[in-house]
Length: 278
Image (cartoon, rainbow, N blue to C red; front, side, top):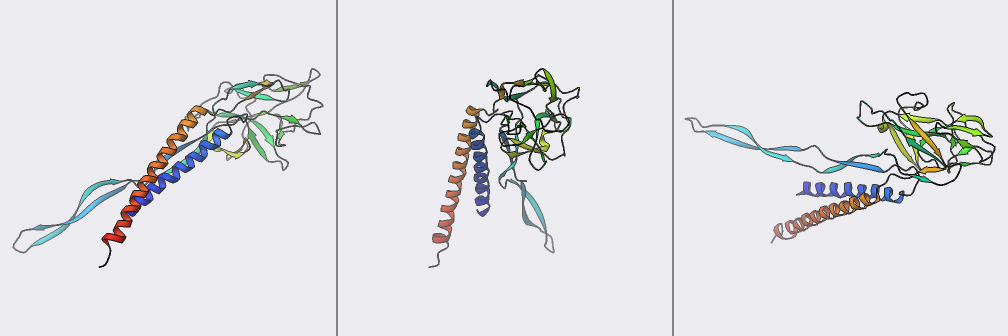
């Protein structure tokens, strides 16, 4: 019976974490470039139960030996194995702002190890020189003319330098080349992650690579993309499905809660009625 407590409780914890993930997805449904999280639930390793019994042999001198008889498998609960972002292309929305740039995926090769498509990112840098990645093209110009994210991270060019412009009257071609007064200034760098599982969310639309600095997609013959100025990539959160999944998670949590309450009542009877000393 005590094992049943742990099994039901593990189900409640898993569904609680799933609800938190779905809530965060729904809250970021209007965040540009946001990639929805997806989770996988997995059962703990099953336990094989066997029954020990003694078999007697009717001989002149009685003998007996012990043997095992399989009963079956016992599941010990469930847990959230991992939570990973879904790198599907979001819808493209026109904003008319010169500093808004949408990254549109083209041909993205499939990783042989994971069987998943790779992912493309803008490359940004914080004030400490640390490299991060983002899909949020909602950029702006700071007081010094540097192209930055809304959080102040510097957008980098193909040479790893910060992009400094004189005004917002610049043009961005589909390959990421920036023109000012019809003169090419630099080219926005786009990073390519062949294995997106090695890219971790940091919050505020930023990602960190666990495999070191990601290589540039520029010059990679297997990768195609285009940049669209005056547009933004919207979140890829499916609101209808997220709400449906949240209701299902609430129902599963409630079912485990009822099971836990039933175990609690059984334990109460065992302690206060069956186990009472008269």
